[in-house]
Image (cartoon, rainbow, N blue to C red):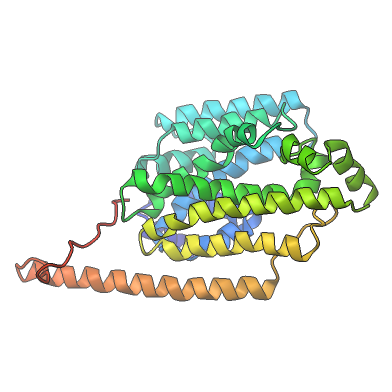
Length: 342
């Protein structure tokens, strides 16, 4: 399927194809939910999504890979080296590492604002020195670079039926919603890395503090105050999902099944956390395999239907053009919605 995706996207240079293939492998190995949803996109758009994921994963591995012994200084230098390669790659250099080469090609093809990549790396750098946040406002500034910009990077690839500016806030909110879910699911693992992404103000509101979280993590003992914090964090997360939801209808029809599937699967992690009694300090909550399969099947049905509609419209338009006519419109009917070029 990799060859088919690359051919459909018009990526023919051997070195570039190898770079995209590397990004796809990273996505398949590490981003299982994300990769599953990506399979619902039209084949020509998948390589770009793999490239965006591959870059994010490369930076995240530098910061968070616990299997690789490295000091904070080593990680900072590696991140700076990645940023330097990003700058040269975006200027057109071809002798960069594969994920950078694929990313630069994707950015050029889809006109993605380069600031989204530099903002992302800025948040990654803060992970090397910042272990906690006082408030949701402070955490939000971090998540602009670590999550909101991911949604903004994706938007040109997905395409929209509204103005880009109208869809952008919802795309950014969805990136934040996904990351808040990751923070909840991975709170125990993040503590092992010296980080807690739940704001101190939230902990204090429920009579808890970081030390209590660390005690629960190390002893395996539950605590009602911690459960209250996690329940409140999940409720906040759901409000962000609700803010993001209207953006799905603003996407190109062929992209909606992919994002809808990711939306359902990721928000379903919150359901799994609740069903497991908010025990995320001690084990990772997962969406049951049967549920994942059902959601994926629904997404596949929607994707096939959307592609069929697109194909029929394209064929009809081509037939009208070959006949030397314009597309007919019923009197008083609105003009057809335009899918933003991608």
